[in-house]
Length: 347
Ligand code: P6P
Image 1 (cartoon, rainbow, N blue to C red):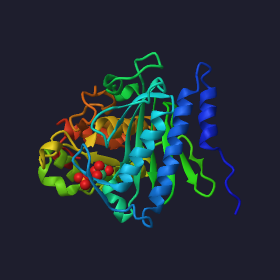
Image 2: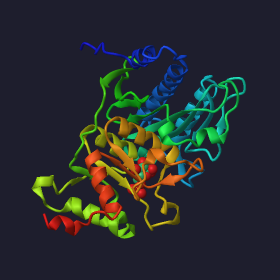
Image 3: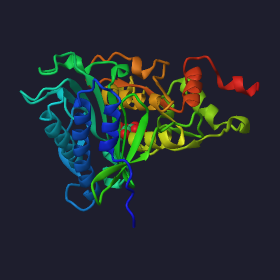
Image 4: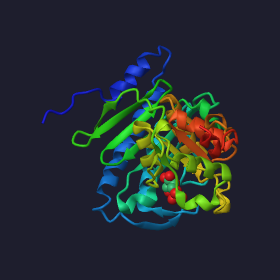
């Protein structure tokens, strides 16, 4: 079968760099190193069912979650490769309590925040999982150590963001602020080929993604919005269909390609979810950058733009409403009390 001789991700990165005469190539180098780590993780994830790596490692991470062995492998793979790459000065990982400095003498001008393997609770049941990354420019001379404050920057300051989803195929989706582009891995040659150029999220969708097992813990406004989606009104394409996989990567990627709205609001089920479950630095902010670059939106459940939130801690959680612009706009009206379900009964 003729292999697709399309654009490789390396060529796409270099083509993008050539558009910026002042570019030093450090961001290209950083992305290239991250992609090597992703290929390594992909090979391991795809073998998970065969190797004895499946199952729990017995450890517990900063989030208080049992760490799956693949989590550890992914975290270690990224940390080791990026600490010595010479392009970053400090890192934050979902799996580590504290910031991770670059190896002394290998400091660069960027910072990296990452979730090494989001959705890891789905590993043993073969559901798509993913690595999420967010890159900022540090406030340093580009040769010295970074500090935690270099990591605590608004999403609007991101230089690049992306994810690798390990699913029926392994895909890399990333943005450097010039659109969103998707690459599919051909494992037989170990190369990512451009498969989704300039992805645009459908403005309006027919899917909503939320864990309805938490309904009793939601605010009244959220309940009103979700019930609105379930009402029948052909003119506005309702009722929507429910699609919730329980893996942020799988749910977000489907919504990016096919359209949809994903909601993980604050709920009263447990104290740690009083500000939502998902983390700002390495989940909400990078996905918000991608969503906005693809024409979508990302807000909190009280209407604040995710990209405008000033982080105060590495593992800060935020409520996340993200997806097709029309749907997030409508959710915002309900959540900010500007719209009620019965308003629509009046036509
Ligand atoms: P719940 C997976 O554990 C995760 O962090 C995300 O990938 C996913 O969207 C969310 O939690 C699912 O949470 O409470 O619905 O199981």
